[in-house]
Length: 68
Image 1 (cartoon, one colour):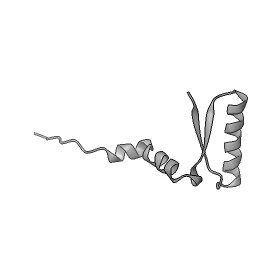
Image 2: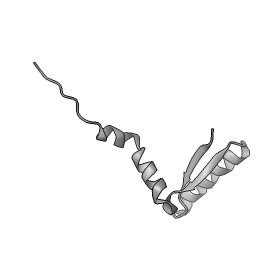
Image 3: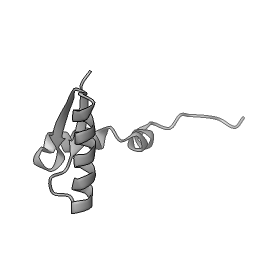
């Protein structure tokens, strides 16, 4: 299994520092991972947006119920 790490090369300094810490940890533990730079790929941005858990909840069709 490969871990997908979404990063942003255009984030602020603090965010980039945290990203580097995560990547360094994965490298240290020899985990298999793939870095994906979100701002550089429209396809990856859409992938993330479409997989937001709360968004899935909002897209569900309402079920018909009756109060009879």
